[in-house]
Image 1 (spheres, one colour):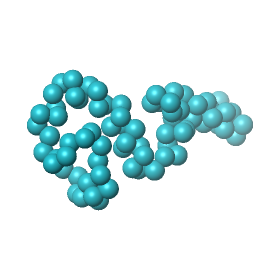
Image 2 (cartoon, rainbow, N blue to C red):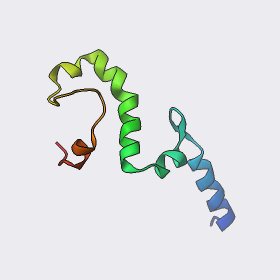
Image 3 (spheres, rainbow, N blue to C red):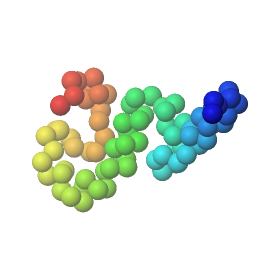
Image 4 (cartoon, helix red, strand yellow):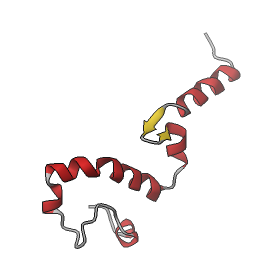
Length: 77
């Protein structure tokens, strides 16, 4: 059965309203800039990685958990 345009729009709205990260729906998260998205992911994973001790092997000089603007502009490692 072929979907109508109304049904397609309803399905997209429904998908955009699904919870994605704490405080964000999928649609809200997709509207963020690249830097904002990375910061939200870092906030989400910071506790788990700290608990596991990844901060001990951090090669960033001031390992504070969030990337600086210079680190954003560097090539990914």
